[in-house]
Length: 358
Image 1: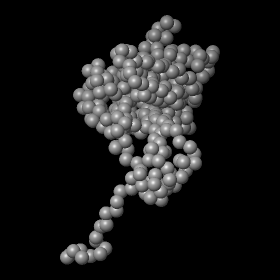
Image 2: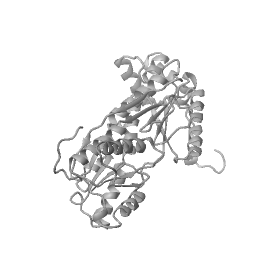
Image 3: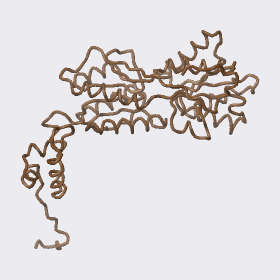
């Protein structure tokens, strides 16, 4: 025995179990073992059951990194997201993760800010992980950055954001149409002093929702009563609400469309708890997204539902099509916009409602 070491402190290094070891004990070929642990590979149920049983008994786990080096595919998807405070994104990321996992892929989540320098740094870091594709959620990608990804053979899909660059594939809801629906609903229910609280003005979702909302009002001969900016941040939305009601109810809006549910909750809390304004009796509030809390009794928020399941499915289809294609498309991406319904709840007055297109 080595001096100074007790029997209990000695570490015995066991030989690493390989696919060949599993194959020998299971009585199958090494390639059969490989197919069992390769998502989507063809293998009989009998062989799969036998190999998995032996692998568990022997403590065998496949080496994903080694397989990636041989195949050139890591089966990893990098997801870039700027913030998770908005309930829409944690739910969407969970659905994205589950959908890709069913196809044998896994998400690596990277946090960034909205600034281009930070996004570029994070994307460069993601590429170092040899990911097979990138999903950009709540962030914009510059043309230079997209070209860098294309040069590395890594396709990119923008989720819940769109850009003018036609080479970038994107999946969003029909944000312009959603803004139109809200304007129509508020006018049809007799509201006359209609306001808007914007999100971050660099986001396509904010731009399109406001454009549909304001243009629909103007076509009906009704102008926006007032406008605030919430930047998709709860504290900013609260401040915008205070400013709108600074001069009392007589000069305040009787309806507010807030660019997303996350801010709409802050608006409702400020109106009720801080300003003593009744919702919806004195002011109606409408959001956008239909996150789970929108249906809670405390908010009961009228909102446009983003069709998350369909957006996730479209993102998966576009990205996997490019990953598994021999020739990565570079000239023009796919721009998918999916319509979502207006969900009418108790945060809005509904008298004089003549019907609403959903």
